[in-house]
Length: 96
Image 1 (cartoon, rainbow, N blue to C red):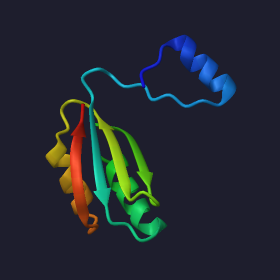
Image 2 (cartoon, one colour):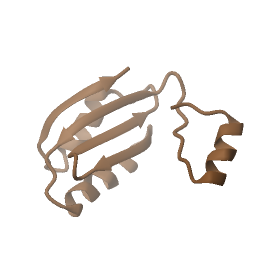
Image 3 (cartoon, rainbow, N blue to C red):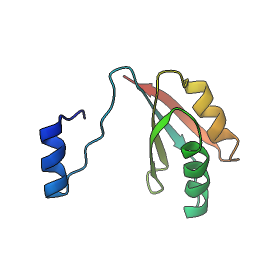
């Protein structure tokens, strides 16, 4: 969800969370086999160190990883970063 400055101020006031995303940013979703917090932590650390990654949202119960990146970071780049953690990637897609 994109938000303007007024929405952001109200969101902070009422505890709402908005993700600001540039129209040219990319969103990628992956289904990744993760057994514990250590697994999700490893993915979180490697992605947050990656240039071009703007946000990372990991759900251990849903076994999902959602990544918003700058335009120059491709799906394949993010896929390879996750793969290097040793976790099994079940599926992935680019979200329009």
